[in-house]
Amino acid sequence: MILTVTLNFALDVTYTVKRFERGSTARVQTVRRQAGGKGVNVARVLHALGRDVAVTGLVGGFSGRSARAELQAAGLRDELVDIDGESRLTVMVAEPDGQATGFSEPGAVVASAEWAAFRAGFTDLMSGADAVVLAGSLPHSLAPDAYAQLIQAATAAGVPALLDADGEALEQGIAACPAIVSINRAELAGVVGDGDGDAVAGAKALRRAGAGAVVLSQGAAGLTCVTDDAVWHAAPPAALTGNPTGAGDAASAALVMGLLDGIGWPERLAEAAALSAAAVSAPVAGAFDAGLYQRLRTEIVTRKLESG
Image (tube, rainbow, N blue to C red; front, top):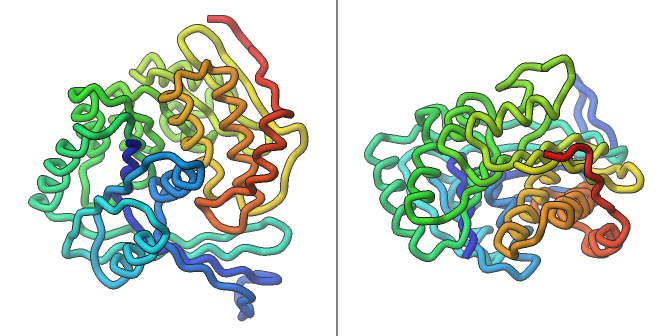
């Protein structure tokens, strides 16, 4: 079983509009409401690909109950932990040209006793987990070492962890030595600086800080991976337009599947690039264009940029 962790659980609302302009009223063409947060998006992709997956995290209030009901209706295993606070609401406004504007609330207040209960439940879940994905922002009331605590618990149980976070939560999480860190260019710059634009150097710095491997998403330019023996790059043959929300989560799903299946990094990175690109062509986070995914799997070839 793959366990995904969404500490800042959300009810995601996606509005599709013809045009979004500040200071005006936009007529919404379609509305989609679903459970959200990066870990939930990863779980949806894994579930669609037939993997045994469970979702855990912190959930509460009206938004949390609505999101939890949708999660269960989607057939995803629910290992969420109730809290007294209100789960956040996120709103994404998507336009036909692929532009997307998002609004994300900060998240619920989590009491220390609630966090202790979650940690105890997480430790219990490790006995049945093959891998864990820890993804997304933290509720502002949680300490920035929250992910580090969970990675340490997973490591103690022999369970590899993939971390997708930013800021101090990312820095402290890396110090706990996750097997894979999945990150975008902005998140990388947030912890190591711009480095004169040398993203590979920044990724190598994260490996020295404790990350087992670092996979860097560069949008339409594809994915770059820094491992102990090489630097790899994979990208679709052409840029795709659509909704980029959830593309990184689809990549994380492919990466954790490759980890468990024992697939080498060249093939694993190509799979992640294909699934990420297919997610861009889907209307909402957590979905992907299955036909495009299958086509890109045969078209994307991973290149070695450097040897270790």
